[in-house]
Length: 159
Image (tube, rainbow, N blue to C red; front, side):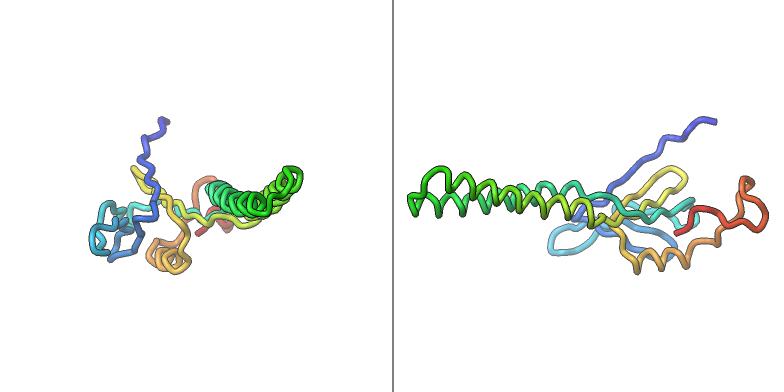
């Protein structure tokens, strides 16, 4: 059996996902705060819905921004006070350790909550919204047993 080509769409910050009638609709922001539908998946075409958490590696850029901002403050203060090089280098090292530790904790401990919706010919990945997920759950047909599962056994994948 050959795998079907799947169009995978990542929802960005300039987009939102809504459940309208019997479709999961991705809308893009246009001028003046209006939204225009750009992509839709009919609810009856949805095969699986996964809710999961993953590491937020994009937060490393935020941590780098904090480090650069605090480093600029430390260097400005050190140069204004005419501090010796050893003093401002140790202050920069302390800022690096502090921001690096907080950033590493944030990446490791706070998951980025995501949802993946697989349909017949597409997959949609977006940030998890519990209200949308529960509304989608009520509109999906109940889980059915697959030939691989034994009678009375619960399927392993649920929303």
